[in-house]
Amino acid sequence: AQTVTQSQPEMSVQEAETVTLSCTYDTSESDYYLFWYKQPPSRQMILVIRQEAYKQQNATENRFSVNFQKAAKSFSLKISDSQLGDAAMYFCAFNFGNEKLTFGTGTRLTIIP
Amino acid sequence: KAGVTQTPRYLIKTRGQQVTLSCSPISGHRSVSWYQQTPGQGLQFLFEYFSETQRNKGNFPGRFSGRQFSNSRSEMNVSTLELGDSALYLCASTFQGTEAFFGQGTRLTVV
Image: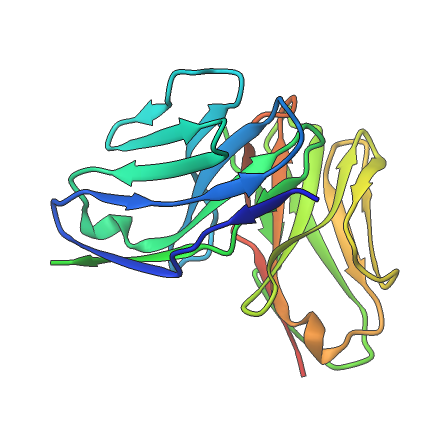
């Protein structure tokens, strides 16, 4: 079975500081896509960043970057220079090649002004 | 380019009734997936349609069904509603198996 685990139900960070959200997964597949989604109070799921498993280089999108460790099956999200608008639920998710996304349980991120 | 549009945004139904939710994908996206989000179970995959055919199905009872039209718009139907069906239903469209783009969801409350 393919599983996704987010072990941090809640995290908080001071504005302008850096925070890292953790995610681990289990799969026997070798090729897949990994994503971080943000869900603010509006409830719309917004794509933050994506990573292809075959790529060794970690993805970066402005203040957001990932640390992808394929052998360890780890996929963490680093948010630099945290802003108040970053407050949301963050979900890591995987597409194992069949259009179905498997989500973690989410991490609620609070930004402290 | 317009995003994924879900209608209605909010819905209140009575136990035993049925409900139909609609999703219009991003233009050019042929794959549409549906997810149920609840506080207890999190985000769970319902089903996925591509070119009017159901390609994948999650572990939900037969009361949950869907379809896709030739213009890629999709509907999902829930019959004989139960209190436990109260949830946020999210639709996502995908282009060639890459990232999924989500709509704003339909909040269904069953009373």
